Amino acid sequence: MNMKKITIFTFAAMLMVQGAWAQKAWTLDECISYALEHNISLQKAHLTAASAGEDVKGAHSALFPSLSASTNHSVGYRPWQDNKTATVTNGQVNTKVEKNYYNGSYGINAQWTVWNGNKLVNTLRQNKLTAKQAELNEETTANSIQEKIAELYIKILYLSEAINVNEQTLETSKKNEQRGMAMLEVGKMSKADVAQLSAQRATDEYNLVKARTDIATNKLQLKQLLELDGNTAFDVFIPTTTDDHALDEIPSVQSVYEQALMSRPEIASKEMDIENKGIGIKVAKAGYMPTISMTGGVGTSTNSLSNTAWGNQFKTNFDASAGVSVAIPIYDKRQAKTAVNKARIARQQAQLDLQAQQKELYKSIETYWLNAETNQQKFRSAITAVQSEQQSFDLLQEQFNLGLKNIVELMTGKDKLLKAQQNKLESKYQTILAQQMLKFYSGSRPLN
Image 1 (cartoon, rainbow, N blue to C red):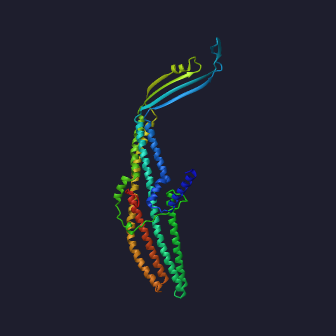
Image 2 (cartoon, helix red, strand yellow):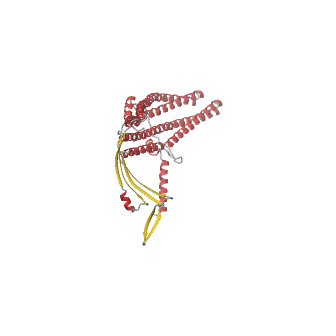
């Protein structure tokens, strides 16, 4: 298969894949999975974690000796040099003054910090904790994205049902308007009453357009959260949600909170930060300790002004050295003490950050629990209200068709039914959202 055929085949395959994505309706699980791979904020968090991993490798390498090679080459000029050098060529003595010269030096040096108050070891421990924190922060970002996706997804489900209600309401309004016009022709309804029916039909059309606009806006926000480009068609799979979903048992606040404390990455990150800051105190205290280092090196040099051959110079000028150095801090202008005090303050701040995070977690869980309890109670009441208002409106509709009820009574009954239906939908999906968020805080993926 030649390159042209391969290119055409590849292009066609890409179009087929894009077409498959464009035609499919995304489930919540698919939205979350795709976002976890493509969301830019999450990718940045992943790179931050990778950078922290490199810091760990660097701190680990700092425990070992360093080895470096160096060489230096220079050319010099002595304009007033008067020392002559003599050479014998074919029995003749030649003398000349060397004003230009060349120096070369070569060396290998090693350095090893043997002990500095365990600063290097504790720095490595700190970097390992920081790397773990970066991974936990990545999980926190992923959780935040999943929560936003779940919230938008469930809102889209609510708006989808709301559109169905509005469509049914509009259909009823159109029938009432047509019925009113027919009654106007036979003199059983005034023009003013027909105008009210037409106005109601126009209002229902507006409500339907608004509901469709709202769902399109939320789908766009979800699409942007998934980092899909503007040319990609996007739609959401609408699962079958029964009223039973909103009537599921709601777990207690305390049980959800206790599970969240053990599973939520933001809590683990704050706890790890306290440990990290505690090691930071030990790192700062190393400033009081002496530093013991070992050094060693070998080197040689050559010079063009020497009468000795280059190889002999390289050999005779060779030297090797080894040594131990001890640096003892005596007066560092309070730098070590300041570092220790600031490290202790940082640890206290980390403890307060943990307390604040725990309170924020409890507040979020309690808010979702309260929303679930309140909206579930509203939903139970709304079920009865819708049944009652539907029966009342059906009776009003029959009486209106028979001329026994006027337009005001019919419009009032319809408004009550629509309000009851909207209350039922809103309380239903508010309950489902709160329930799923409680499950999510307990460690489960939303709508699973």
